[in-house]
Image 1 (tube, helix red, strand yellow):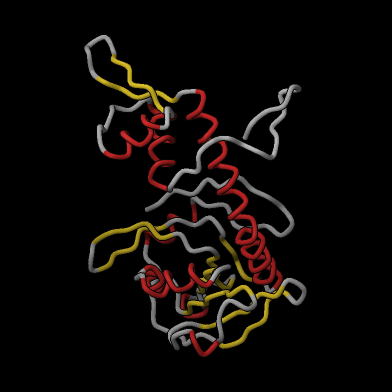
Image 2 (cartoon, one colour):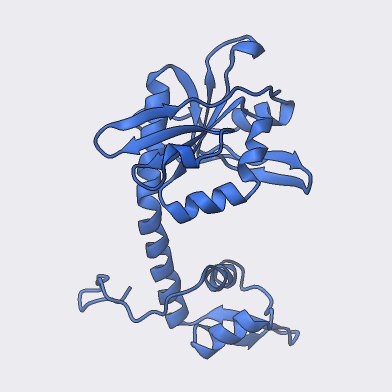
Length: 240
């Protein structure tokens, strides 16, 4: 974003649009003044004068952000926040709905799950369970929010949601109204349609699968902040 004479940011910006990999590299150099990678990403960033190569006292090469690099990083952050807003609103709405139904809800839970390719961190959009003391009555659920058709198709092609079966008996895909038909969703998933005016509408229930919450799951929840209706909490989750 550019600034006007009063120092305020204006809507227009001359900062180049960054790909995810280029933005991630800029964030790395901003946060750490990390060692230069000297790969094609660095070549692109140097060519756009977003980074500057410097050497430390030992002669090791490092990259630091230029003024243009800081502006490009700020513009990238603003774009990402704009893209996330519709998703965040629906996540909040789903959490409000489940909280009102009496369930214990988490929207920032991060857990380690084990699959064929090893351990990976999983962060379901909304994880919830019944407030009870019996394992067989917890009815743990995961709700994954999709606001675009492309995002939905990428989700169905990946194995991410399969990992959620480790910590929940039912998996629901929450679809923004209009991005897909219910019959396009595989039968392994329940389907919730989110309409801007109607809110949460259960279009198809999810089949119930066997699951078993383990110590690492409970520890992740213990270190998390449960969702509280009409409040905003800073996430303090850690992955296990």
